[in-house]
Structures are given as structure tokens and as C-alpha cells.
Image (cartoon, rainbow, N blue to C red; front, top):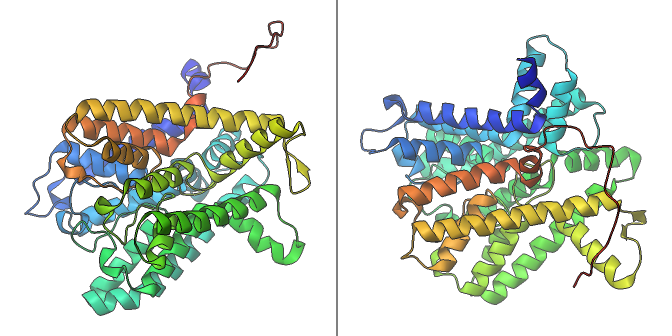
Length: 431
């Protein structure tokens, strides 16, 4: 047992926790009480749905609203909530509620789960994270309830509002409105578009950035990470809106919403199967970038892309990488390259595997599906239920790897501390 605990690093603990969560969810969704009488489901469908919910992705092989009972929908909602917060946060929360204290290992898992750089006030951060989640989801439920109450009735509308708010803030992309058209029926309704977009942006900013913005009222200063997150989020939203409007004849509101949603949420107010290749490519790029560190979203993260641009500018100008009057450490630049290299390599490999499993399908649709799964987005231009068992298995692995993130995946192979010795240095030509 001691030897096992020695090799059970925080990254491996988180990976095993998510795996256990997915398997438990699949078991619960396989129960007759979770499925409606009209639903014909295989164990693979239950596993796929559980993985999609726990990894806050949103790809589905069945109509969520019609296929699952109230019990099944509650299971999916719990999987989304735990998946958004992270299994580490759940485990530590249970420990604290039971009256236990935070061990060093608990702090390491939270640090790994939220991609934070310090152990300072981890227990206090956990409480604030839970409070932020509650505030956003409660506010979102109250704001969309009148619309759903009008369309589905007061009681059912409240249930749909709660489900929608939790799914949206956690960037999961699940809905129980019936059918597989996502939010297309609300494509011309400004209120639903605006509230949903704000919840997506809030969940994608990251807990640390939200807390920093809240403290800005008193301190009048923001951390470098928060500044980078805000700048990159604004650039991606505005740039994505303009490019989508240029590439596809849709409304400005539709372009704005899809620019926000494509980064990680997975909701759609337009039929993406009719989008032009240029628009799909723009959305693939937005999905690959994703949300920000410590958020409920996926992708390689906004700060990673920002660090790569700084590195490119530094190489071209010969100056040290700096932003907002701060020098960026070389370790941050190196980590950014590692994330993109691992994430991009896995994406290429997964696309190849999906092409081998579905040789008769269009390459762009399979690439879009793979990027959506790897970056935990949930958008699709090919009906996911039409994919074979092999392709679904590939997508399950993609969602799992995408939720863990490239850095956590990289640490899975770390067995011991770094060696104190090193080889002699020699360079080689680049470019």
C-alpha cells in the first residue's frame, strides 16, 4: 500500500477519480429507473452519456429530454456539476464536511485540478469556488425561468431552468428541451442568448479570475493572469464574431453566440450542418483555444495561446517575453509549448482513429467532431448517434483526455522527482 501511495501522484488520483465517476454514472444510467420506456439503450450509450456529462462535453447519442427519466436527468446533472467543479473539489469538500482537515495531498490535488500555482489558502479558495458556482447557477436559473415557464409550464419550466443554468455555467452543453436542435428554437430571442452567453463566459473565465475581479473593488489591481484572461476572452469573442459573420450568412447575434459557445459550451442557435468550411474552421480554432485556466471549460486555454504569441514576438524582436509591464518566466513559455504540442498531437491521432472507424464520412465533419470531443465542447455537424461503436469509443477517450488536460496527462508518467544531474548542453538549428 505504501508503494502504491508513493506512485499515486495527484494527477493520477484525479484521473482515477474521473474514471470512477464515469463508470459509476454509466452504471446508474443503465438502471431501468433512469431510462424511459421508449428508449432503447446499450451499455455503450450509457457509458458515452456518462463520460460526456462528467467531462462537461455535451455530445449525446440519445435525446436527453426524451430518453431519460427524472432520475436519469438528475444523475446527468450531478455528473455535470461534479465534472465542472472537479472530482478533487468534491473529495476535499466531503472531507471538510466530515470534520477532517486538509492534508498536503488534498492541497496538491486541488492545485493540480484548478491549475493554480500556490498552496496558499486552498481551503478558503474551495469555499469561494462553491459560493461562486451557487451564485451563478441560481442567478441563471431565475433569469431563464420565465421563458421556460411560458413555453413549458411553471413547474417543468423551473426544472428546465435549473438544468440549463447548471449545464451552461459548467460549459456542458446538455439540454432537456426535447429533440436534438439544442437552442435553435431560441435563436432569435435576445434574452436567452444573452443570459446563456453570460453564463458561458462566467464559467469560462475561471474561478481565480472571477475572485480577482471581485477583489478589484478594494485593491484596484488585477493579477497578470486575470489581465491576460480578460484580454484574450475579449479578442476571441470579438474576433470570432467578426470571422463567423464574414464566413457564414448568419445574424450578428447568431455569430456572437456561436463565437462564445464554440470556445467550450457546445450550445447552438443555428444548424451547424449547413455551415461553410471557412466557418467550421473558425469554430475549430475557437474550440482548440477553449476557456481559461481554473475554469469549467476545456481547450488548451487562453493563457497558453497568449504565452505562445509572447514567445513568437520575443524571438522576432530579440526582447524578453513581457506583458503588462511584467516579465513572463521562461517556465511559463515552455509549459505553453508543451500543452499545445501534447494537445495538438493527441488531436491529430484521435482524428486519424476516427477516420479509420468512419471511412465513409466527410473529413471536415470528423475533424470537427474530434476537436469538439477533445476540447470538451459538444458541438457536432454529424449526428453522433449515427457513429459506430468504434467511433464512440474513440470519442469517449477524447472527452476523458480533454477534461483532464494535457498537463495532467503529461504528469501521469512521472514516477520520481527530477534528477539532480544533467547532460552537457549542445544546441541545434531551428527553422
